[in-house]
Image (cartoon, rainbow, N blue to C red; front, side, top):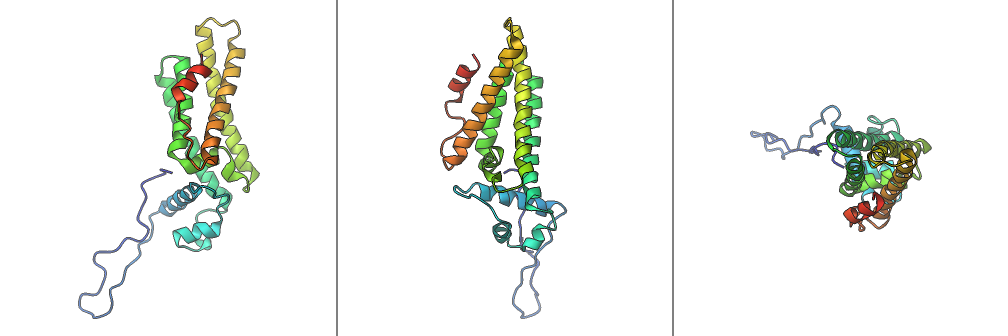
Length: 221
Protein backbone atom coordinates (compact mmCIF):
# COMPACT_ATOMS: atom_id res chain seq x y z
CA UNK A 1 0.00 0.00 0.00
CA UNK A 2 1.46 3.30 -1.05
CA UNK A 3 -0.49 5.62 1.21
CA UNK A 4 2.55 7.81 1.78
CA UNK A 5 6.28 7.55 2.07
CA UNK A 6 7.06 5.14 4.85
CA UNK A 7 8.41 7.12 7.81
CA UNK A 8 11.08 5.79 10.16
CA UNK A 9 9.54 4.40 13.32
CA UNK A 10 12.57 4.76 15.58
CA UNK A 11 15.18 7.01 13.95
CA UNK A 12 18.47 7.41 15.80
CA UNK A 13 19.37 10.89 16.89
CA UNK A 14 22.97 11.57 15.73
CA UNK A 15 23.42 13.76 18.77
CA UNK A 16 22.32 11.06 21.20
CA UNK A 17 24.67 10.07 24.00
CA UNK A 18 26.51 12.10 26.63
CA UNK A 19 29.92 13.19 25.33
CA UNK A 20 31.29 13.96 28.77
CA UNK A 21 29.73 11.11 30.76
CA UNK A 22 30.74 7.50 30.88
CA UNK A 23 27.11 6.36 30.79
CA UNK A 24 26.17 3.96 27.98
CA UNK A 25 24.87 5.49 24.74
CA UNK A 26 21.10 5.66 24.44
CA UNK A 27 18.70 5.94 21.52
CA UNK A 28 16.10 8.63 21.69
CA UNK A 29 12.70 7.91 20.18
CA UNK A 30 10.96 10.67 18.32
CA UNK A 31 7.22 11.20 18.31
CA UNK A 32 5.50 10.58 14.98
CA UNK A 33 4.18 13.73 13.33
CA UNK A 34 0.41 14.32 13.39
CA UNK A 35 -1.23 11.70 11.19
CA UNK A 36 2.02 9.83 10.69
CA UNK A 37 1.14 7.02 13.08
CA UNK A 38 -2.22 6.52 11.34
CA UNK A 39 -0.39 6.09 8.06
CA UNK A 40 2.01 3.61 9.66
CA UNK A 41 -0.90 1.57 11.01
CA UNK A 42 -2.62 1.44 7.62
CA UNK A 43 0.60 0.60 5.79
CA UNK A 44 1.33 -2.21 8.21
CA UNK A 45 -2.20 -3.57 8.01
CA UNK A 46 -1.99 -3.58 4.21
CA UNK A 47 1.39 -5.33 4.27
CA UNK A 48 0.07 -8.01 6.64
CA UNK A 49 -2.82 -8.63 4.25
CA UNK A 50 -0.26 -9.34 1.54
CA UNK A 51 0.86 -12.49 3.32
CA UNK A 52 -0.66 -15.53 1.56
CA UNK A 53 -2.98 -17.44 3.85
CA UNK A 54 -3.45 -14.53 6.27
CA UNK A 55 -7.14 -15.19 6.90
CA UNK A 56 -7.54 -12.63 9.63
CA UNK A 57 -5.32 -9.89 11.00
CA UNK A 58 -5.88 -9.32 14.70
CA UNK A 59 -5.20 -6.05 16.47
CA UNK A 60 -2.78 -7.92 18.73
CA UNK A 61 -0.75 -9.07 15.71
CA UNK A 62 -0.91 -5.61 14.17
CA UNK A 63 0.27 -3.97 17.40
CA UNK A 64 3.06 -6.54 17.68
CA UNK A 65 4.27 -5.77 14.17
CA UNK A 66 4.33 -2.06 15.01
CA UNK A 67 5.89 -2.71 18.43
CA UNK A 68 3.19 -0.74 20.21
CA UNK A 69 0.34 -1.67 22.52
CA UNK A 70 -3.18 -2.38 21.28
CA UNK A 71 -4.27 0.66 23.28
CA UNK A 72 -1.93 2.76 21.12
CA UNK A 73 -3.81 1.62 18.02
CA UNK A 74 -7.11 2.72 19.49
CA UNK A 75 -5.77 6.19 20.12
CA UNK A 76 -5.82 6.62 16.34
CA UNK A 77 -8.74 4.40 15.31
CA UNK A 78 -11.88 3.75 17.33
CA UNK A 79 -12.07 0.17 16.05
CA UNK A 80 -10.47 -2.28 13.64
CA UNK A 81 -13.37 -1.59 11.30
CA UNK A 82 -12.19 2.02 11.12
CA UNK A 83 -8.73 0.80 10.11
CA UNK A 84 -10.25 -1.14 7.22
CA UNK A 85 -12.32 1.90 6.33
CA UNK A 86 -9.03 3.78 6.04
CA UNK A 87 -7.85 1.22 3.48
CA UNK A 88 -11.14 1.43 1.59
CA UNK A 89 -10.90 5.22 1.52
CA UNK A 90 -7.46 4.88 -0.05
CA UNK A 91 -8.86 2.52 -2.70
CA UNK A 92 -11.80 4.82 -3.41
CA UNK A 93 -9.79 8.03 -3.66
CA UNK A 94 -7.13 6.40 -5.84
CA UNK A 95 -9.53 4.72 -8.27
CA UNK A 96 -12.10 7.52 -8.50
CA UNK A 97 -9.33 9.97 -9.36
CA UNK A 98 -8.13 7.66 -12.12
CA UNK A 99 -11.66 7.17 -13.46
CA UNK A 100 -12.14 10.91 -13.73
CA UNK A 101 -8.86 11.29 -15.58
CA UNK A 102 -9.78 8.52 -18.01
CA UNK A 103 -13.21 9.93 -18.86
CA UNK A 104 -11.70 13.39 -19.37
CA UNK A 105 -8.70 12.38 -21.47
CA UNK A 106 -9.63 9.35 -23.57
CA UNK A 107 -11.39 10.10 -26.83
CA UNK A 108 -13.87 7.24 -27.22
CA UNK A 109 -16.15 5.36 -24.88
CA UNK A 110 -14.69 2.00 -25.85
CA UNK A 111 -11.14 3.09 -25.05
CA UNK A 112 -12.37 4.60 -21.78
CA UNK A 113 -13.95 1.29 -20.77
CA UNK A 114 -10.79 -0.65 -21.60
CA UNK A 115 -8.66 1.79 -19.63
CA UNK A 116 -10.99 1.60 -16.61
CA UNK A 117 -10.65 -2.18 -16.50
CA UNK A 118 -6.88 -1.92 -16.92
CA UNK A 119 -6.30 0.58 -14.12
CA UNK A 120 -8.41 -1.38 -11.64
CA UNK A 121 -6.50 -4.59 -12.33
CA UNK A 122 -3.15 -2.79 -12.30
CA UNK A 123 -4.03 -1.17 -8.97
CA UNK A 124 -4.85 -4.54 -7.44
CA UNK A 125 -1.70 -6.11 -8.85
CA UNK A 126 0.51 -3.38 -7.42
CA UNK A 127 -1.30 -3.42 -4.06
CA UNK A 128 -1.83 -7.11 -3.21
CA UNK A 129 -3.24 -6.44 0.24
CA UNK A 130 -5.76 -4.03 -1.28
CA UNK A 131 -6.91 -6.65 -3.76
CA UNK A 132 -7.99 -8.83 -0.81
CA UNK A 133 -10.00 -5.90 0.54
CA UNK A 134 -11.53 -5.13 -2.85
CA UNK A 135 -12.92 -8.65 -3.35
CA UNK A 136 -13.98 -8.95 0.29
CA UNK A 137 -11.70 -11.81 1.32
CA UNK A 138 -10.07 -9.65 4.01
CA UNK A 139 -13.46 -8.45 5.24
CA UNK A 140 -15.17 -11.79 5.87
CA UNK A 141 -14.69 -11.64 9.65
CA UNK A 142 -15.13 -7.87 9.91
CA UNK A 143 -18.10 -5.51 10.08
CA UNK A 144 -20.76 -6.13 7.43
CA UNK A 145 -20.79 -2.45 6.46
CA UNK A 146 -17.27 -2.82 5.05
CA UNK A 147 -18.43 -5.39 2.51
CA UNK A 148 -21.42 -3.20 1.68
CA UNK A 149 -19.08 -0.28 1.07
CA UNK A 150 -16.94 -2.32 -1.35
CA UNK A 151 -20.13 -3.42 -3.12
CA UNK A 152 -21.05 0.23 -3.56
CA UNK A 153 -17.56 0.89 -4.89
CA UNK A 154 -18.02 -1.66 -7.67
CA UNK A 155 -21.56 -0.36 -8.29
CA UNK A 156 -20.02 3.04 -9.00
CA UNK A 157 -17.39 1.51 -11.29
CA UNK A 158 -20.15 -0.32 -13.17
CA UNK A 159 -22.19 2.88 -13.48
CA UNK A 160 -19.19 4.63 -15.02
CA UNK A 161 -18.69 1.74 -17.43
CA UNK A 162 -22.37 1.83 -18.42
CA UNK A 163 -22.11 5.51 -19.22
CA UNK A 164 -19.01 5.28 -21.43
CA UNK A 165 -20.15 2.08 -23.13
CA UNK A 166 -23.53 3.60 -23.94
CA UNK A 167 -21.71 6.43 -25.70
CA UNK A 168 -19.68 3.86 -27.63
CA UNK A 169 -22.82 1.91 -28.60
CA UNK A 170 -24.56 5.09 -29.76
CA UNK A 171 -21.53 6.05 -31.83
CA UNK A 172 -21.66 2.62 -33.49
CA UNK A 173 -25.34 3.06 -34.32
CA UNK A 174 -26.70 0.42 -31.94
CA UNK A 175 -30.48 0.20 -31.83
CA UNK A 176 -30.39 -0.66 -28.12
CA UNK A 177 -27.37 1.22 -26.73
CA UNK A 178 -28.57 1.16 -23.11
CA UNK A 179 -29.25 -2.57 -23.09
CA UNK A 180 -25.92 -3.27 -24.76
CA UNK A 181 -24.00 -1.00 -22.38
CA UNK A 182 -25.65 -2.46 -19.28
CA UNK A 183 -24.77 -6.00 -20.32
CA UNK A 184 -21.17 -5.15 -21.22
CA UNK A 185 -20.62 -3.18 -18.00
CA UNK A 186 -21.91 -6.06 -15.89
CA UNK A 187 -19.61 -8.53 -17.67
CA UNK A 188 -16.58 -6.25 -17.28
CA UNK A 189 -17.12 -5.71 -13.55
CA UNK A 190 -17.51 -9.47 -13.07
CA UNK A 191 -14.27 -9.91 -15.00
CA UNK A 192 -12.46 -7.39 -12.77
CA UNK A 193 -13.67 -9.01 -9.56
CA UNK A 194 -12.90 -12.49 -10.85
CA UNK A 195 -9.36 -11.60 -11.86
CA UNK A 196 -8.66 -9.89 -8.52
CA UNK A 197 -10.16 -12.78 -6.59
CA UNK A 198 -8.06 -15.33 -8.47
CA UNK A 199 -4.99 -13.17 -7.78
CA UNK A 200 -5.68 -13.07 -4.03
CA UNK A 201 -6.61 -16.74 -3.71
CA UNK A 202 -3.62 -17.95 -5.72
CA UNK A 203 -1.29 -16.39 -3.16
CA UNK A 204 -0.72 -13.51 -5.61
CA UNK A 205 0.75 -15.81 -8.25
CA UNK A 206 -1.87 -15.42 -10.99
CA UNK A 207 -1.45 -11.85 -12.19
CA UNK A 208 -4.76 -10.07 -12.87
CA UNK A 209 -3.29 -8.35 -15.94
CA UNK A 210 -2.09 -11.48 -17.72
CA UNK A 211 -3.18 -11.53 -21.39
CA UNK A 212 -5.28 -8.49 -20.60
CA UNK A 213 -5.23 -7.00 -24.12
CA UNK A 214 -6.60 -10.22 -25.60
CA UNK A 215 -9.27 -10.52 -22.91
CA UNK A 216 -10.41 -6.92 -23.37
CA UNK A 217 -10.58 -7.32 -27.12
CA UNK A 218 -12.93 -10.27 -26.63
CA UNK A 219 -15.06 -8.59 -23.96
CA UNK A 220 -15.51 -5.21 -25.66
CA UNK A 221 -15.83 -6.10 -29.34
